Each structure stands twice: as structure tokens, then as C-alpha cells.
Length: 118
Image 1 (tube, rainbow, N blue to C red):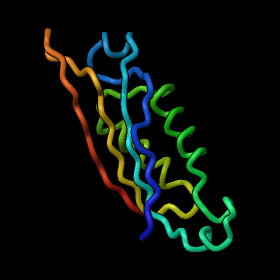
Image 2: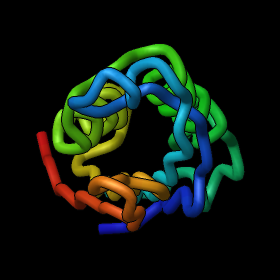
Image 3: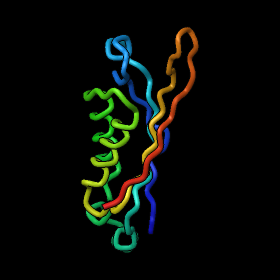
């Protein structure tokens, strides 16, 4: 199966279990790998025969910036579901990273990676 990858997408959102995480925007990075058959598009050179990854990007942006989830797992699941709704996408691998997760005074990067298919 062919792959279309959207790498290093960066957004600000309000995701987390704690009140402060919901009140103050945080930085999130998303990488998305879409499984699809690109042979028809490769021959026709027509976007109508492929996955419009600009539209996928905008869908992910909307989810991260406008929706709110307690867990990165839930955010990743929502992104995967949106990706699978695009014509021709048969599977999606999603990585979501919170770039400044907190544990008391310490900060670190937290990442969740999932794979879903139709």
C-alpha cells in the first residue's frame, strides 16, 4: 500500500486533564501517515484521483485547535477517524505529541502513536 505522510504539523490547542491545560494553549505536533492506492493519481496527475492532503491538514488543524480532549489518546483517535473519512484512505497512523507536558515543576514531551484502519 502507498503512503502519504504529513510530517511535523504544529498547532496550539487546549488538551489535558488539568484545568490549567484547558485554560492556556499549548503546543502540539502531529504526524499523520495515510495508506492509500496512488496508482491512478500517478497516471492521471489529477488531484481528484488522490487524497487532498491540504484538506486533510485543515481537518487536523480544526480538530487540534477547536476541539478539546483530556487525553492525547482521544485526540489521536479523533484525528485518525477524520483521516479515515477521506476518500481512498484505508488506514491512518497518527502520532500526537504534547511538546511541554508537565509533572509538577518539570516539563517533558509526551507522545501517543496509534494506527487505525477501515
